[in-house]
Amino acid sequence: MALYRVEGFNSEKINEYYYLDLIRYRDISNEISKKFNLEHQSPQVLLIINGDLIYNASHNAIKPNEWGAYLE
Image 1 (tube, rainbow, N blue to C red):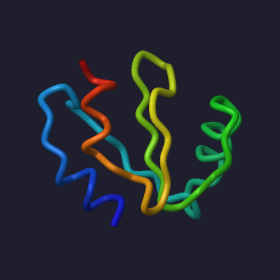
Image 2 (cartoon, rainbow, N blue to C red):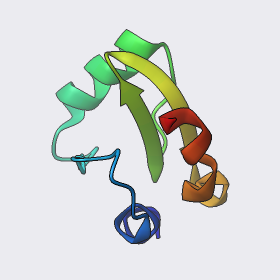
Image 3 (cartoon, rainbow, N blue to C red):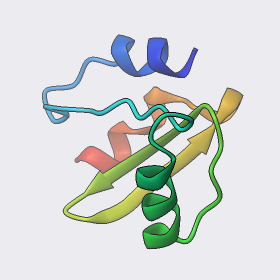
């Protein structure tokens, strides 16, 4: 569901995104969690711009239409 929402979001300002399998790449997930001081959730979307966490949502709270305000 989360990946579908991300893939369905069309913006010229997002030129790349990454899908992280939390089970397979737990060490990377742990580092992200530690760096941004947040809890793992799955599914979860993190919008990171210039190294800063701008948006964080999980499950049904993932709403790509809210990202536009952060991308202007």
